[in-house]
Length: 421
Ligand code: ACO
Image 1 (cartoon, rainbow, N blue to C red):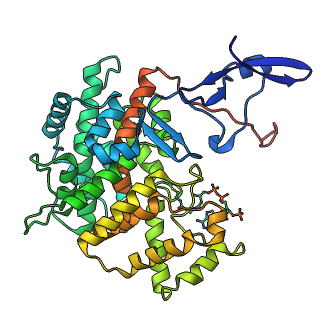
Image 2 (image 1 turned 60 degrees about the vertical axis):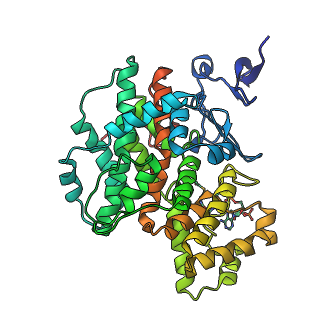
Image 3 (image 1 turned 90 degrees about the horizontal axis):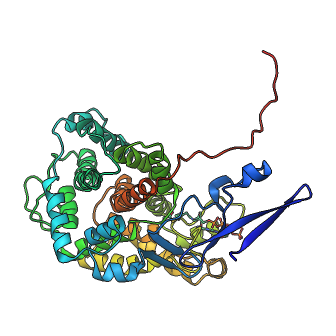
């Protein structure tokens, strides 16, 4: 007999079944809670709430495990390209050579956007935050590609997915080029997906550009490491928006807005801003270590600690190596990056950080790489979005295929009781 959980309320016992995942994660299935007991659950931030069953990503924060469709990120970062990982997340398996070629060709064919989209971009001030611009342009794609997606049609869904994967790097690079005052460019279809991202962002109009293999390799890893992280804030946003049967582009546009916040994707920007302010204050890292440990001081060492990973962030281990390689290859001597190295060294042997298991997280090193590559700080979260796109698409598709009901939480009302006007 399957296991049940008992709940007693007002002298009555109620039973609820357990749901168990493929990695033995257990949850209480409370679908019938309200109809049986008249009660709802109260769980701000959904810290104890499973919103769905998902086959896509497995994460174990205690053990520092992150796997996409069963493959460890360590293995994927070593052996796969970002576009193979995108295929894996979205379609469920690693592509064969033939499938990969076909997928790449479909993407290349669609690597264009309507020229009129440029007028939307033009209407933003240069000072607009790239994440706001990216979200608007992604939404703008709907107007230029209005045909609705029949979720029952594999061809329709695939077409929408390919369109978004192909066009998104163009939109992302345009937000960068606008900030930099550079002419807008298009993909070079002889390049790989990741080489193309570097090409579209960094190619200057008066110079040839060939991205170094170390830079492409680091970008490839960064994008893979950000590609999915199960039901985080932006992914849950994409799923909940899509649950109203809003289209893929609209759902992803909402996900971009969710990712923008400093408590989510915006943390990589906060790391560099912190390092810069330490530099402007004389570069005394010891002073900031003391501030971080002082309970009367709100200062925290940005890029350290993680809500889910309590022993180490497996993504940070991989990306630290890539960051060292990029800094070596580019021969960069940047005082801000030297401050980062000093902080890292001090924190890793400081009892306060050791006892609380506060290790550098993925954002600490990703910010360092982006800065070394010359990407403006406010573009960091756009880079995150480029990586997260396949995850959002995979989660949106899974939610629609499973025919999940519209997301509509309840509340405990705590306002005024009825009163006359
Ligand atoms: N600097 C100094 N002290 C810290 C830090 C830090 N970065 N992070 C946690 N602590 C301390 C807390 O003060 C607390 O100390 P106490 O036990 O003496 O009270 C203890 O460590 C536990 O901290 P919590 O806040 O309870 O840990 P939580 O899991 O809630 O927070 C979080 C995790 C938000 C990531 C936190 O570590 C933090 O603010 N880090 C800096 C911001 C950051 O880098 N965010 C990016 C996360 S990665 C990502 O989103 C992709």
